[in-house]
Image (cartoon, rainbow, N blue to C red; front, side, top):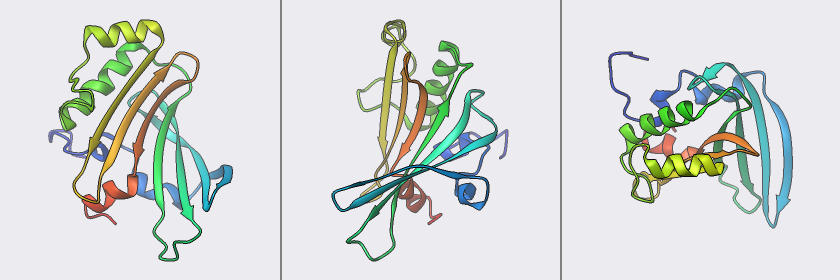
Amino acid sequence: MDFFKEPKTILELFTYDLTTFFYEDYKEVNSEEILDTVLIDYEKNLPWKEFEVFNRVVFRVFIEKTNITGTNHINVTFHADEGYTKEHILKIVEKVTRITGIDDNRKGFWSSSDDVQFEKGHVDRMWTLGKNENIYSLRLIYDKNNGLQLSILFFTNLLKQLGKL
């Protein structure tokens, strides 16, 4: 990671290389079958905290039984179990907004409406990005009862767009 270079993608904001997730020390934590799709969640504790708060990451792998080409869809979710504040959430929104621009609700940087939502116990920001068939989304959710999560939905599409898959 070049500390003097402005990040251009969400992956450049992380020091943990998500493409190495399955190399070691992960565990299956959930699996279920919905219609003709199997969902499997794999989890690992991160060796350090991303964004100073996220201590675990979960890969949700979607396997379609009728798809024999071997292309599986993956969602990635970072979890913060504790130790985060409104300032941490604000910093995440600011960093993501610098890279992506406004979110799906046409909101940019942290605002007074975000303060109101935080006080109510729920912040939900989503950015849909990508091109053509390589659409992916970033979603940041804070819920006072369920914690803080940052997800990359359609992670494989992001990798395709970046030429890493």
